[in-house]
Image (cartoon, rainbow, N blue to C red; front, top):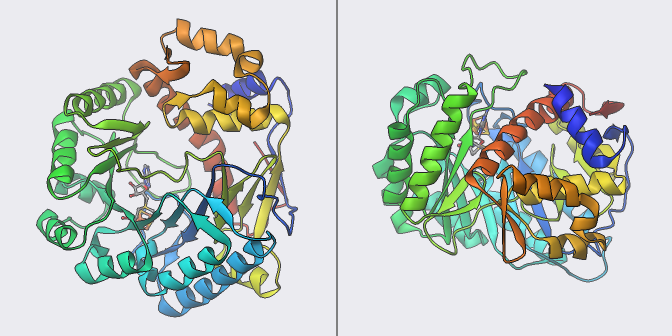
Amino acid sequence: MSIITNLTRMWLTRSFKPFRFRNEYDEVLPYGDCENLGLYVHIPFCKSICNFCPYCKVKYDRETCDRYIDALLREIHMVGSTYPGKKTVTSLYFGGGTPALAADRLEEIIAAMNEYFTITEGIGLELHPDNVKPDVLRKLKDAGVTKISIGIQSFLGKYQSILGRAAVNPEQLREALSQVPFETVSMDFIFALPGQTFEDLKSDVDEAFRIGANHVAIYPFIDFTFTKSPVKAMPKKEKRLLLDSITDYCARKGYKRSTIWTFSSEEQAKYSSMTRDNFLGFGCSATTLLKDRFKINTFSVDAYCERILQETLPTSLTLRFTRRQRMVYYLFWTAYSTEVDPEAFERFFGVPLKKMYGFELKAAQLFGFTKKRGGVHVMTLKGAFYYHYYENFYTLAYIDKMWGIMRKEAFPKEITL
Ligand SMILES: C[S@@+](CC[C@H](N)C(=O)[O-])C[C@H]1O[C@@H](n2cnc3c(N)ncnc32)[C@H](O)[C@@H]1O
Ligand code: SF4
């Protein structure tokens, strides 16, 4: 598996040089000249831990959560105060874990962000279905949250029990959501679970839109090597059929495909922290992507708080890009939105996309992976499936390895991918 990702990396970066993440870091992050910059905050607490979940999370307790948020506020001030004046950013996303568990302290976090950043495209936050109650939703809205994302996984009991999650009550969600509206109400589903059919997935999507969602995210199940889940991912052929059928169904219903895995029923409904050229990440495990570097914070809540107490950034590893490596990162994340705009690429790198990747673009068109529309390279249904398929390889070869190490060691010496 990693042979494919290694060969692709060598080909696209035109170099044998691997991605080398080292245990060194900058105290000042040069984000001042970054356009299209997003903000991300990680809140790693959950009421109960799901055995299939790869994210950085620990069991919630009030005292640890408060200590963590105190440290988080200091990290925001440490990073924000290095830039003179206010920096304009696109969005702020809270991911986890379950950030809704920190609803009482959200106002403080957003106020700290507002001291240094002008947020132009709203604030998003993730919730567990248990948090979808009018009083919690009101707190989020009063703090300034405009988009919410709820981790449903499936409305069908059969798949909830495969995943070891409690059944979701759609009527309770519908009632709470009707009382407190948000610009985007997104719901997460996992597909490619054993035995899952198109009818099952379609009923989940229909139910989501019926009870108040205007956006759905349908993630393929990924069997990470370090999780304890007994669930095995579906074979490629079945998975493709399922993805193609649900994409086709969403298109027929008039839902817009906003990224590889997301569909929206209303124009304004958007929920994606990934489709940014640059982003600043705060909290444990959060990543930061800038023009020439990528950094990842420690996964350990205790080590994170300790570093902040010492007034140093909680960075665990830094990758310093070669130009081609940065181009590959750029293209990979931009393609997630199902489109690559050559003009945007040229604005970012100061060189035409065609000059750097003319051959690959031609080949992608020839194989039917992309089509050109108004000068922009747009993924076809086939292209979207293969992107998704390659992303799966990438996740297992790169993210699985990195997260597998980072969850055990707070500050590993080096990771080479
Ligand atoms: C941080 S959780 C969402 C909020 C909340 N913690 C919850 O679970 O309801 C992010 C989402 O990642 C997805 N996810 C988690 N583990 C996954 C896996 N192994 N494969 C695919 N998707 C996964 C789930 O859809 C989940 O809703
Ligand atoms: S899926 Fe959500 S609730 Fe479950 S462990 Fe992961 S972050 Fe926590």
